[in-house]
Image 1 (cartoon, helix red, strand yellow):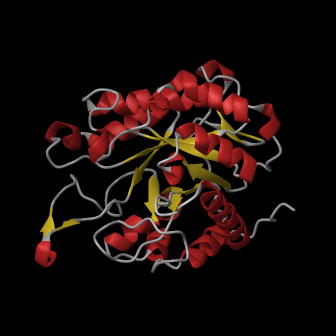
Image 2: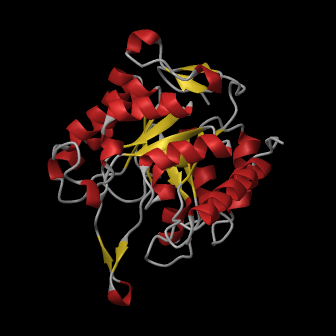
Length: 297
């Protein structure tokens, strides 16, 4: 699956030097071109910091990180992120734009400015993908031009903007509120690139395997996690919920998927740093196994 405006390099995907990307860490240049890279989201180490994510990802052998731009000030400071990438020699695979409800004031209040700044950050960090949520329904002007606006940004920046599947907001008694516009399910929308989040699929009572098949080549990015079908968007470790995560990975391998698979799980209930580190190491080995990748000795 090719990606517009980017070129493969051993260790991930980077933009040509004329794009303005800062030099990527050369020590990571051992990854075969075309292989699915496995990343660690900075949200997966919360309440630890963005810096901790880079340190853990490097030590445990992840192929890179996804930066969730948001609450941690370091996640909003591109100069600091460039430093962390170089210091730990860990590539940045993707940037998650600050389009969550809790990050509405991050990088300003203009949603298009958020996406443009995310693309600039991705270029500087050598990332090829920006993950973005669909607009909230009260962002009427933004929502009206969202599909074409995202396509325009892809053309002008060379960055893949992968729109993430969300879920309906459910109230007492199972009533649903329309939170997103044009909608929480991107399947029938005319997006070029999509992000599959397995926990969101569970919360929306969908099957991730069905979405992999329905989306075809539009599937560009995966948030590897799991869910229990409840309204709380659990972000369980893959294999702990109802999304048949092992089968999803096997299906991706069968299809020759060359996007990124990023672990985005909730580890807040893990009591110690040592236990969190072991859990993240175990799930990395599990992921490589089910993608059919050799697990480093």
